[in-house]
Length: 602
Image (cartoon, rainbow, N blue to C red):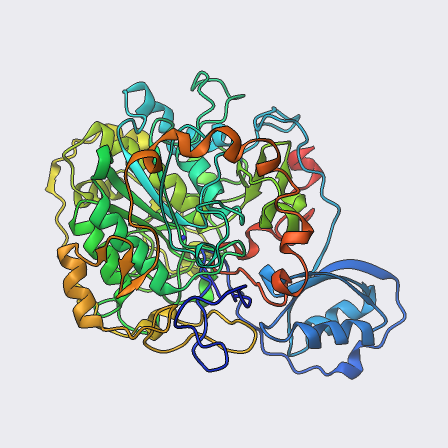
């Protein structure tokens, strides 16, 4: 679940306890994404008047000031195009000689060329181009992290369940036979929308990276193969169709994973959190960090995104900033399989001397499964690759890669603890070559890229039990502080304070005690409120949930996710920014000619 602040629109029917006319409102939208720190500018609007030749650009504004930025573009003689709420920006045409002045204003954070993008059109991910392989394909990612060596040793994630706490997981090809449908804790469910569906596209993208499998030869680059192709995905949906969620929903989801990790033949050993907030309190009291620690102590390895706020963020995202769990940063292979060429992605949170990312994994332009007609698919069609795939960048994607590798290791070492697997990953990584970027991010020689080949060569107990001695969290801190700057806004009110999405009071001491005991859930009740259904047995766990008429033909057609369902004010860019789940991962800037030059990609 790595990244930065999303808002929620007025639902058709508010959950019980929500008072939309008061300060009590909705949820937080959290993500694994990149928050660009607003620059300090001094130029005024008078500098923007121009009559130069128009250029197509992507303008990013200070959150909440998109309207002012649009007015500046028009004042300069330009025109405003499609809003890109997910990045607090919009497409525009501006006079070439006004772009610099626009960048210098107080409400604009960046102005980048919106170049025409020609993504790969082949339906496979791995067509070899004139300049070499596609380093964002899963075939390349698997090779970069050494996954084939683990597969050859029989470690494919078989028998291991990975809980993906995200925006849902769609039963698309490559995943349809390996999804266990857990509870839907999202606002979609509270509003009566289809249960457990990923209408956003982020969770499906992560699940594909972790455990996608076309069931052909693992060695055939034309088959889509995740890092742990035989692992199973447990879908715990907390993000709505726009990505919106609150920290209270995420905590409830983690509690559910802990309490039900071995139900009905499940074996949840890994929890993927491609998500994060910038908490305003120490991890030793933070409730989200505490929930992650509880999962860890119950044998569930929590793999969390470091965040995409770059060097300006001097802490990792919550819960990755808790040193007891596994924090993941993203790296760029720079079109090379040579380790010395790899560099940290410039958007990865730098962290601090006390706490930086434990390991780094590929996180640039990763091509994974798309959700046809979903939010990302509709709003960022330039990220599509062929009929089945879409590209995304971020510590979200890197986190999913590491979750897959962890699942492989848990199959190989079924009695291993999370401490042991973290220890093996840490001790088998390959350090980055020192560079100005590693210095900027504050990375030391003990931080580097995951290496499945080296991990395979280490005994899980070669360094003892790997037990960690960091201070424990007690979880008695503030729910509001855990939200950081990521608050859910319904247009009139913001969810703040010590309360969950239903407006129920948050009692941290009582919750922390119940969480440690694994008793926070009573059927479908959590924090004294009904969040989902009571039943976790029977068809709910079977493949029947995902086949037949429910997911075929017209049920999963573009019409179902058409403009009639998701357009207008309810789903407009103004109401939904989506930064915490994706941010720059799908936007025009990251897919411009700067990133995808003809030289590199033909």
